[in-house]
Amino acid sequence: MATVLHLEDVSVGMKLPELIVRPTPVTLFRFSAVTWNPHRIHYDAAYAATEGYPDVLVHSHLHGCWLLECVRAWAGSEVRLISFSWQNRRYAVPGDVLTVSGEVTGVDVGLVACDLREVNQDGETCAPGHAVIRLPRREGESS
Amino acid sequence: MTTVEQAFATATRALGEVTRVDLGSISARDLCRFQVAVWGSMQGTTGSPLDGARPHPLFLSSVLVWGAGPPESDLLPDGNAPDPFAGVSLGGLRLMGGGQELTMHRDVVPDTPMVMEVSIADVTMRQGRSGPLLILVMQRRFFDAMGPLVDCRETFLGRDEVA
Image (cartoon, rainbow over all chains, first blue to last red; front, side, top):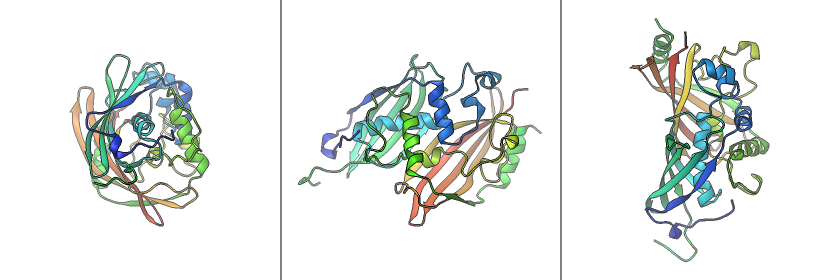
């Protein structure tokens, strides 16, 4: 996670390396605990069934985190995030295999824009997103 | 009046009112635990969240209950706190997070007191396939003594509980 990406390394259309995520009940429990989120739909499968779901649900925020991890894994966790957004389109449950991908859609004055997407094993989009990051220039280069 | 309609009326009255909440501080350990939880299901994660990485940008906007939170006996049947949005009661609704729009200003600094300003930015109600649907947009702004940290607009979808 210590890789440092520079602005000169990036161009529009570049694909971000895909991330594979296999959520487990333990993942969801720990995320509930660390965010002090008591909603039973994330750790109580019997409760989730009363709302019509096949299992406990991945948190909305965790979908966002995984989208952002795709950017951080690519650009380095020291990257400066300027803005980030995502939408939850479809739920995910333990046992799903989620693939997070991204593509550079803009490069301008030190800022890089990326479209992001998290899809499940059936190709259904769970969460699209968009991030804008600031990347450093290599020493000695200027715009 | 349905629960969605009641919540819509309550939220409409509270539209734009800003509530300021002292959050206290978070520790470096809290931030590391968050990163570990996020990495839990990802393939290929290596290293330690202590290895100089910036604090995770989504920590502040992911925490649902600050402070100690209510006693278990005060939680709603679905487990949620009765007042997660500082003054707007949404008890009886099936709530789903719809996503966030974030503007990042500065990194969180561990052990530094923070404040959150919460308001309802927008509320609408429409008829969905399974009944009335509440669409609530919450604005949360996080600060420390040096100024703004994160601005977050988060959408929540609320439906009546299953009969």
